[in-house]
Image 1 (tube, rainbow, N blue to C red):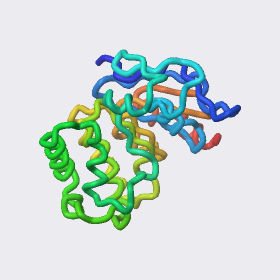
Image 2 (cartoon, rainbow, N blue to C red):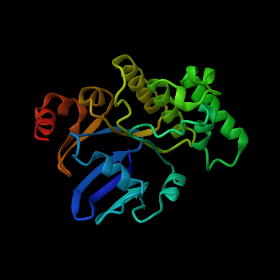
Image 3 (cartoon, rainbow, N blue to C red):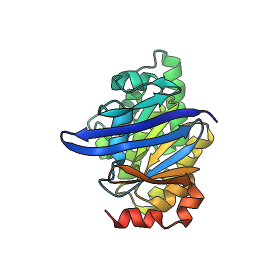
Image 4 (spheres, rainbow, N blue to C red):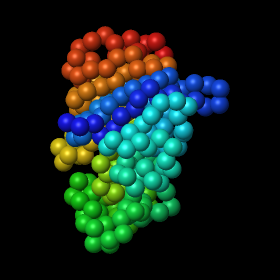
Length: 237
């Protein structure tokens, strides 16, 4: 498989505080790769840097062999990258369908937009029932479904998940991971950030472990699950 996403020696900072320290990672076409680490390890900063929200202070980022660091976030979205953000970030006073359609902002053909909306409703049947309901009145699990569906509306090549199960009940968490696995089976490449290392490694093929802005381990998901490096990274936080 060819590399869809590559970070080569990427560093990033908030003012004088270095958040990423020369990290390198690769996500191959069709893979699910997880990025693990405790709070403050640099996981969300990695996504912000990939998306062009935070400019790297050094290093290079490539999407499908094209260098994207330095591009505006809107351009990166147009190139096929979508994010399911931490906290879902829905518009609470807009309906479920209106929130979903925001994900198709760069889809010019209404028939295509309608087709993708139908695909999202097939994936999450409850959202079809809630299409006219204000997003702010949905349950936490339903809001997570809307956030994932919104990202899928753009038919992304690469889907970035930032803590999609944060604050959700265990039953809903299980459902969300089933959806992530289903998305991967359809051929969408996934970079998954998740505090639940066990579940993340179960759905991923490979993983990276961040600690204080550095990659301290990488490898096959089953190898990482058996090693003590995950436990060590979380305990050192």
